[in-house]
Length: 375
Image (cartoon, rainbow, N blue to C red; front, side, top):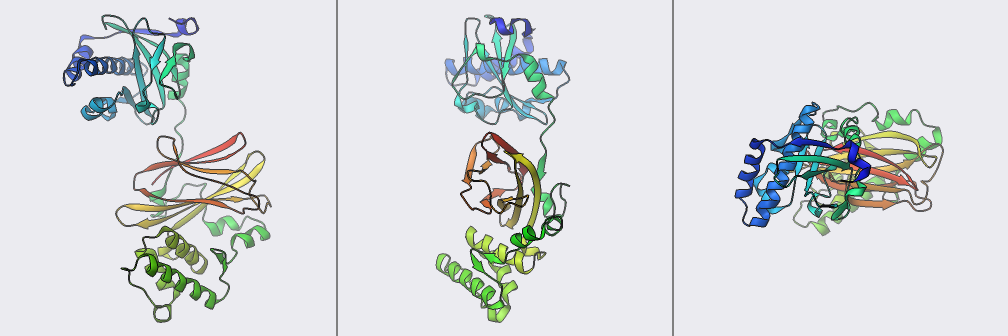
C-alpha cells in the first residue's frame, strides 16, 4: 500500500452474489486469460457500484460497456455508468502490484479512473485512489489521488450542454442571441464589418453581383454533381434558386456559400437554417471574442454545423495563433484551425448526426474556453 493514500483508502467485502455474476461473465469467454480478466473487471465494477450506492450516487450497470457481452469479449473494459455524468473506469490490481494496467481501450470517454486492489481470494477489495485521466498503459500507484478527488469530481455541476436540435424549434439558451439582436449592442463600426456584403471574398452589393454568384454556384454544382438538375435564376429568381441549392447539393462548400448568401438577402428565410452568437467575454489572454454557431438541416437525420469565432471590443482581427478546435464526445480533436495575422474570423465546418455530442475549444496561450453541444 502506498503511504500517500493509505489513510484514505476504503476496503469493502465482495458478496457471494457479485462473485456469481463475475463467474457467469467469465464462463462466456474463449480463453482462461480472458475469463480471468473479465472476472476481475466485473468484481471491480460491482465493488465500486456498492460504494457509490452507500453515498447515494446513482449508477446504471446496464448502460456500462462492461455489462455488454460483445464489449466484454472484444475489449478490456471495466466501466461503470454514473447517471448524468458518464463512465467511471474501475481497474483492478493484485496485492503485489505497484502499477495498474490502463489499456488504450479506456483512455477516452471516461470521467475518471479508480484503482481497486482485490485480495487473493477475491473476498474483499480496497479502493486505492483516483485519477481524472490517463495517457499511458501503466499507471504507477504513487500517482493516484485520494478518493476525495473522486467525490469532488462526482459532485461537480454538470457542464451546460447546448441543445442544437432545439434551435430548429426556436428554443434557445439565454446566452445565445440572434445575430440582429446581438449587433444592436455593438458599436457602429463593428456592426458594419459584421454585415459586410461579401461572400467568398466577392462583393454582392448589386443585384447583378448576387445573380452572378448564384449562377457560379450552380455551375460548380453541375461540374461536381452532374446528375443534379440546374435552375436558371432568370426564370425562378435568386432566393428560390438558393433554396433549391441548399436542399439538393451534396457539396458542403456550396451549401454554406448558398446559406451565407441567403443570410445576407433574407436572414429569416426558413431555408437559411439557424444562426446564434454568444459573447465569450475577455477570457483569452485579455482578448474578447464571440462564438457563432450556425446549423442547417440535411437528409438522413444529419445536420451541417458551422463554428465561427469573431474578434470583439473594437478589435479588427483575431489574435494570431488563437485556436478553434472541434472535439468529439471522447474529447479527441477531429478538426482544428488557427488564426493568422489579420484574420477577422476563423471557422470550422462539419456534419453531425442527430443526438451526437461534440465540444468546441477556443484556446490562446495557456487560456482556453470549452463549450459543449449535442445535435
